[in-house]
Image (cartoon, rainbow, N blue to C red; front, side):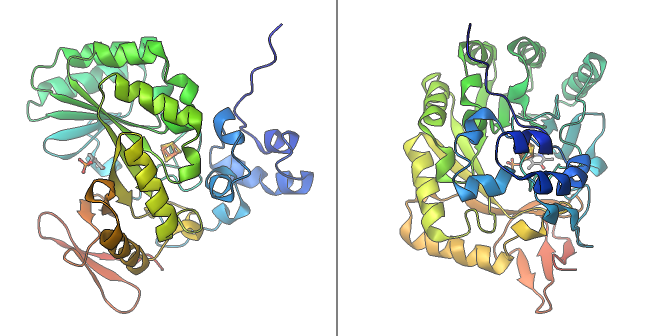
Length: 345
Ligand SMILES: *Cc1c(COP(=O)(O)O)cnc(C)c1O
Ligand code: SF4
């Protein structure tokens, strides 16, 4: 008989059984669990002793505090969804969200009001692919969700095959946390599926702290890199997780050493119940300025800001964002329109 497989912790009772919280704490988390999905993968259970890991995945009652500036659809996905599962905000690329499930549920997730819900049915996926086929300006599809790499190899292969037929589509980018959160899922079957794509496949790995890069995670990343897949990293700037130059330096250097190019450092979106994770923009800018002086250019991501409401992403630099002095900012989008950002209301 094999030993029972370790499994993902999904409820306050699971967390209690695993010895991570007391019965009283579990009781206090019932309301959090009713609102937001919980998931701590076996790989991350092994590194929960690291406070910067625990903070990202352990639910807390602080999540029940939503400030007025926070909203359920912080970056305006709904306003740009022509069909279910597609977000089309920029002319040359779309997001395709086949599933809303993830290997872990990050407590600061920008789509926390939808992650964990049901993904696309077969018919809905067909309609989404038809939309991509009909819009010849779409050069790149970004598979996101949720986490597309939690899909079975069979299901992923169907998506890859459907996209292979679309002539104008050249790039397939996959945004995922699986290489660090569930490295065992980056197996031969999955690599085969990615190789089956006739498009150029990029994988963007969401990674926020050097402790996430365990030896198993590094091996999973190496399997992707050895398959010839260019790798990018996305990092979310998080209070008391990675908001200092030492940790960011260690993280970005470790990623580069794993053949992963740091791509974006995200200012945390205004998702509900996440204010305890938010780093003020000025502090983020100061951190990035300090890194610029000491880090190799290949290790330095763009500090990026997604304008609330759906106007898109801009670099979080002073040429796009100007503080008003009262805690609010004026933000210029890529079309030159000015938006007000009030993170503290
Ligand atoms: C973030 C995002 C993208 C990808 O933007 P890049 O700057 O190309 O990484 C594409 N579409 C939508 C709707 C997005 O929110
Ligand atoms: S893996 Fe991504 S989509 Fe899933 S909970 Fe974390 S941030 Fe959200």
